[in-house]
Image (cartoon, rainbow, N blue to C red; front, side, top):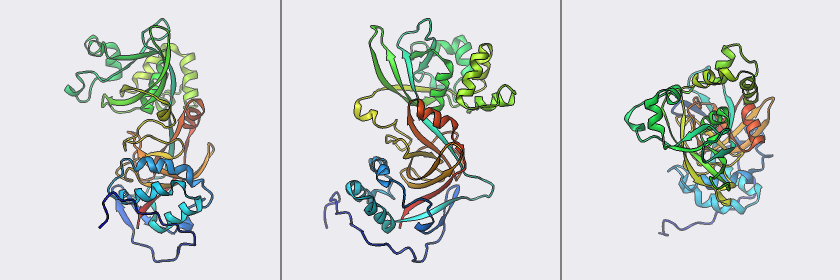
Length: 355
């Protein structure tokens, strides 16, 4: 018997793979039903730049689940294969299943998220007055912890946060965006005036429920455009109501600071699977519907973008609930933020499961 860690050569499958064999039975996985389909039913499968997703798949193989671990040696070897070979290997080893809700009436929805790039100061200044915090020492002693409003107004709670500041931002809405996205990049100005870019990664939350400030503003009749640009425009015009808006969302997030060397800067933060996210190829899912590390075929057409591509389920989020539900990792910076902020359109998903 060969050693367990011996890497067997990946098969080079260049001819057509039979797509007419009998289909396996449907599967139920948590909140979803998986209906087997033929590869020919995946929209755009022949046209996607499959090789762009392979780096994300290799990242998943850093922490694979038991189902996909046996495939990872071949996934790594196929990273230098031609796209048609990668596609043929997928057809030979994987079975596509259309993801459907167990209960009818759960429509598919695709949203987006990104890694903000913010300007911060290590010390508070006349302009930078909004703190970002590490987890407080008392976080585990109270569940849920205090609300956003209590953190800003109750002296006892403010005392528990004193000394836990990582840095200060100029705009409270930027801080809110960072907390909702769960991580970000910050160009921080040190006390001596030098600057460096660091990553702020999710460390913990106060366990309070998430409430959308956009929905709150719509309910108030304050705005018609609930995108982040629309919300920011409203805050400029209504500075006296900004705290009221922010406090409508009791949930907040605490961070840890991480260095950002060049190699890490080419990828996003680590998702819930524990591997770095790949722009355009990583999605957040409901883990009770699709396991982490699963390759997924995604199709979504709408006013913001048209997507038909291979992605990897590598993250989750408190708002990502449901069978046909995904959050698309758009990357970092203003363009990614614009896409993520406007993306809300119909979605279809197929999991690609080992035969």
